[in-house]
Image 1: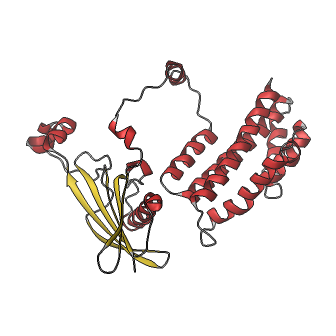
Image 2 (image 1 turned 90 degrees about the horizontal axis):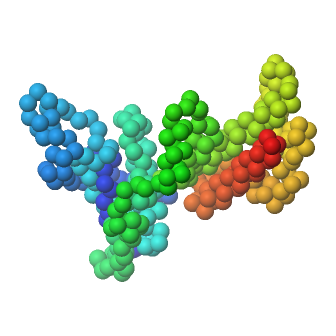
Length: 312
């Protein structure tokens, strides 16, 4: 039987050092975690030696999720033949289960997930029963970004918008924050959570746009509240809002105007979303999650476009 060994580094701490046996797809993999201390000079720069090492400023650090003191060396032995192309996904899958279980039992909610670009210098080896190495490869991920390290340099237009927004009391729309969170979950290999959050972002925006339509009609607040309670009830739901409520209140309908997009959305809503919320049915693959996210985001863009048209 061929086994695969994955060796790589993570630039921060995740869990205690040790060996963990992980069951994925009915196969037991071995995951070895070792912490490697950063250089004393690096630690001094970040913590200031006076507070970190001596005197009344000495303290005990209960978490090091930013890798101030240590980074992590990982070795995963998988009883299966994993290709170099799939090695990053498999590394992320194993780490994700370890972190979720560790959080659950320790209640250390701050333990970070591991995005794919935090898996550094991934070496993938396929070895047979005799110990002969059949394949060897290195998956460096976004190595070019790591070699040519640059400070974040956003455009002046973006920086100006940030400064102006910070001076106001405006709130970031909930759906925008949910969309960003969804993308973050996807990058960390949490595909089910990613789809769930993007679906919630769509529901939030759809309701917000519907309410704006009623407000623009000049209706009284109590009437708007009563109508929104009706449209947001279980009897209606998101599907009927997109194809019926919008049609009635603004003469717009996703199903009529964008039939191909409606089919993609309908699949994402009825298939991918169902599996995401009930993972015992099926755990979403990266491609399935990506397809669902794309469909939801296209519907979000459609709502934003008609919202702009209606507002004008």
